[in-house]
Image 1 (cartoon, helix red, strand yellow):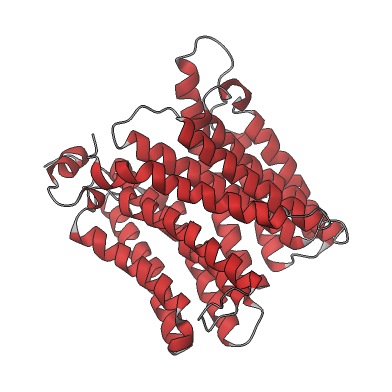
Image 2: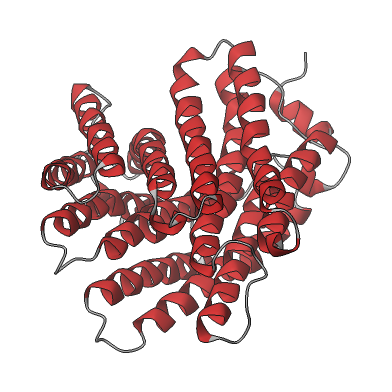
Length: 396
């Protein structure tokens, strides 16, 4: 039987359909830049969004269930062959899966011109199909330890369903339970997978640099922090404004800072491709600390600022870190960040800091404009720098 690498090299069609990360990472980045431009135009009154969902609902939804699932799909379709030993999904099946994702983006954008239930069904179809495909691969490969990843993606899909129900029944979906379920699932997924890849990639890089402190191995400490993380996210989802959930969120923030410190990120500042993983993960404890503060002192820290630390921070920065690294590594390039990639990271971090600070200190001028511009440039930068690799270069 052919190996995954042999199967990928044997693909003679379009290079973009030769590996799962290629169409989904490129599509996700292009969509993130375009969606932000559309959102800024709607905010300024330049144009309106032809969606049956309100502009704020569309904006929140298309990040959580437009951009993010595409990155997750690209990551899983690339990682699962390594996890299971099964052949990768390439060619026409991969194109069909991408079309499921893209049709959801179109349906949500023009949902004002169709029954809203139909738009919701089209949007929900992608994560449903993704779950079925991933479950088939994990079960067929008897890769039981990664069922927890599947479970978290299922929770993300459930959040999408709740969002649509809230929107269709007249609820405030942008600040509702559905979005909190989605954010909680995404943060838990990063806490689990990030807890594998951040110390692993850091250890690999440091091992070539000579003696010194290395990241701690996964042990009971990580398990305990993950348990508190899950509890804090559950309480925040159900009771976002309660003092009890705020206190547990502060505890989760402190524990995740301790967990991150065990991975010796200060030793890899010389390589942005590794350092950005630590920076992205840092927004998990930052989000917990801001979420706790928002529950306990809402007059100082608004909940939206805390939520953006997770969404624009942990989710966006960590996914950019994974997309750049995977695109380089699986395209036969050296695992080192060039000037373009480093600029992408700087712009993404600028965007999240400006957005969070604008919520806490709204009197500071132009922060929202800086955040939006930096976001668009970061993701457009990914498209410009990485499109030649994703569209043209064969996997090694």
